[in-house]
Image 1: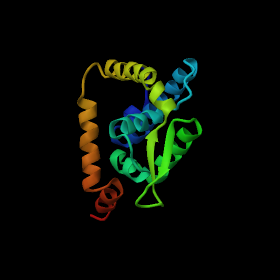
Image 2: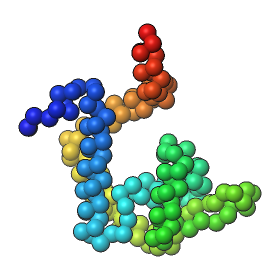
Image 3: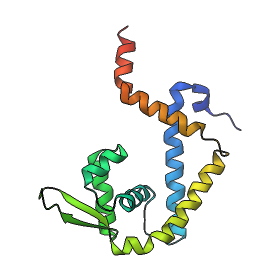
Length: 160
């Protein structure tokens, strides 16, 4: 492998390496979908799957289950609605909320999409050589950030 300054940096290069990998996966997945004439985006698959599992959720519930911001979920949902993959109905108990479900189009396309997602999952497993250590380490980092976030840790270390 060529010289890679981000690897050389060690811990300080971690966030840039994670971003680089994320960008690579997103870009290549977009290209894959485009080549296969799929009118979806890479980050939609989590919304498809969570609505398949729960059948009906609000934006806030999706946000909480995925640990992603409310605005990020709204942005995804709006794009999916425009493509006809999400149906929304005002909540009967709280008219400020909308119950979201997969549309008929989404349910019809789901078996095909799941085949593509399965190929992606297998490709990731190959890239990781079947080793789940990276997933375990990410869980540890996420738990530690939940206990005390990165900013707080930096502040504490700076003020020692």
